[in-house]
Length: 106
Image (cartoon, rainbow, N blue to C red; front, top):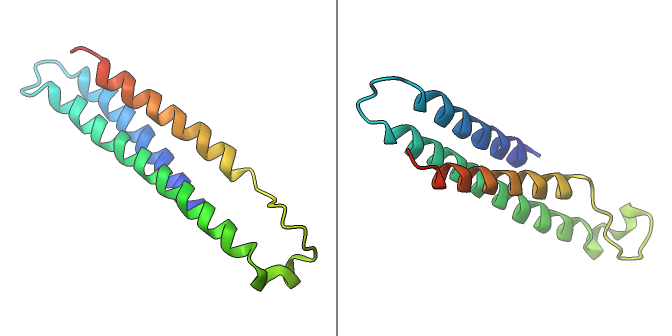
């Protein structure tokens, strides 16, 4: 969940920075707002991908035979939490934000 929180924060902050800095009149480097926004959004997307990988490896570990007695059942059917779909949705939103900022012509 910490990875998801970090990814969401970076994506949101990157998009906000882009929107705010783009509107500053007489900026010496107007493309810097776009570049900074893309870097932050891209870092957020990478954090979300790491979150997915971390979640997958942790689920595999917790459903291993070592923890079978603690689970109380042994049907090997993985019971996922709501973290996975939320992470995928936020990842798609981040990719959409990245593409939107990238294709925006100054």
